[in-house]
Length: 424
Image (tube, rainbow, N blue to C red; front, side, top):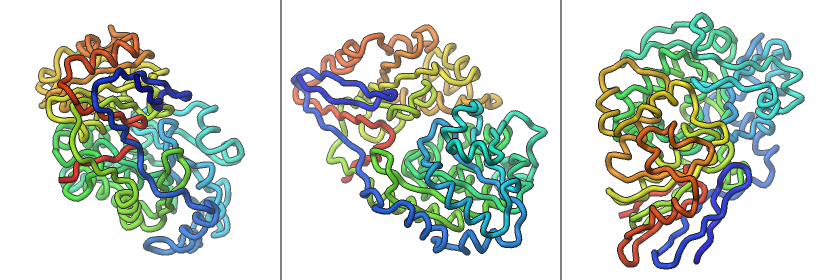
């Protein structure tokens, strides 16, 4: 018997594995933590990858808007916000001229306690920190259509500022290739009309709209264009180690700075696989990413690059907040089959959060997917309920059942935080 600990909720979970299969633990590979975070941040802000330093940009401005990640992302805002704010003030922008927007996209707004957690209690009590609300149409400014026809609506509080900033971190993302940079504008502070289009089948079914892909990824290109229309002036993003320490800092003109962060992440974090697995047992990376079933799907989408066609994927997620949004919950509850769902939404108007189930369905038509998600009821999972287990041991037994001798089983304790690809 083998026991491996997986990220799960805040405490983690031990997974007992029977003898027989050939187990391979795939762990997140990262650069070392920077030895002096404060010095690294100061250097990045004063000597950006491209474009002028932030202090220079702040001079002559009266207001600034800063888009920051919501509670579902482990962005180290408490470390990155203070030096950024200090430069804005040194440039002449007062405290009451700064708005910090929680980039919710179509997620729920942050609670007061969560806002204190996201930005720190001192900043929460001293600055204007507000939730973006994509569904409040009157709170957005229409900027026109992108070249591909996406209507671009951005939060008026972001657009009204003299300086438009984003603050986040870079990791593989199931659709955009990598998070960070332009994603803090769209979907972060975009209106639902915009968000629905960039998450429609038009983009979701593009083969290159997947983890780790930027070159040739039409969604990545679209997001850069949309951020440019919103006059995305400056970004500060970091990369993180497996224990969420800062491993790299990238600041400056957003397109160039984000590209530098992505290249650094690729160079330092890619885990090279020598073969694909018959079974993958993975997680949704624990808290905060496994708060909901919606977010837990990211464990599945990351695993698709590790498993053989026709292989099985078991994903573990605590889901302490249940399914997710009402729109997503309704779609999931009525799910009959993956093939039927993909056909159902092909030409119909886009509904909020349908895309996450679409990404799952695209994988589910090629692989068997299983779940251990104790925070949700089987009856809320539609046809997925038959592949969801109340017991972790039952889930493991089922996904390993009937494997050929010496079958390859990949164990990914940190789920989507692992960036792995087969090297031919």
